[in-house]
Amino acid sequence: MSNEIFEKIKNKYNESQINDIQDIVLDTIPIKEFTEEIKNYLEKFTNVTKLSLNMCLLKNLTFLPLFQNLIEIELSDNHLQGKDIQILSQFQLLNQIKIANNKIENFNDLEPLSKLRDLSFLDLSENPVIKTQDYRKKLYEMIPTLVYLDMIDKNGKSYEDFEEEEDEKEELEEEEKEKAENSFVVEDNANEEEESENDEEEEEEIESENENNNEEEEFKPNKKRKLE
View 1: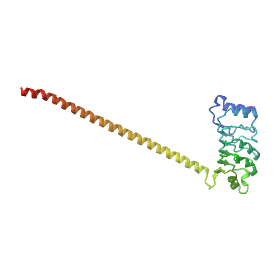
View 2: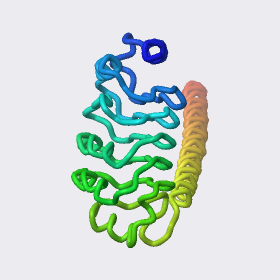
View 3: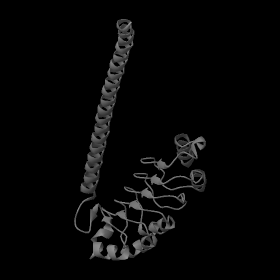
View 4: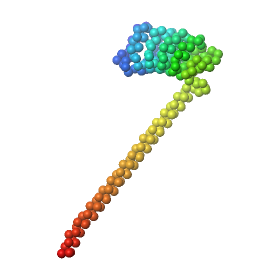
């Protein structure tokens, strides 16, 4: 079975893509547990910043690939226990951890996460540990950088609301950008029209001046004849 899993992973992430791959998503592949062979293969992808292993039937994180640039990891809907948290402290750049619906029970097993100085998002929902007394208060004290715990911040605002607000901000910024670009185009067109009108006026003035000069030239000989 492990050979089949390995082949499936190799087919999905080919070595020819080593420098291009930033996200490795293996959701629903029944890995159960990593082998050293799979670990060594995946660690060749040195630019990975996101690793997703949701619903992989994981029983432990032994031989979990160690990506030095990893920022986000998803491990929800598996069979992981508190002791498996320890390895996550090795990913020093981790900003987001989603490990909902596992078998984490003991609050003290979360202590290694305090070593992650950039951790701002942690989802432990649907784990027995959330029933610990003062669970949220203790975790915010343990991890000062934490903003969202189980999809909700300290003030009770959901992460989904935050994402919606961010999407709205992006839409407004895009609209403002389009307005600015359209305004620039209109102004540019107006300037071109004004320049064109000025050019036409200059041409008319030049033509008028040329006509006057021609009339003067015609008048001079006539005047000379009269004098004679």
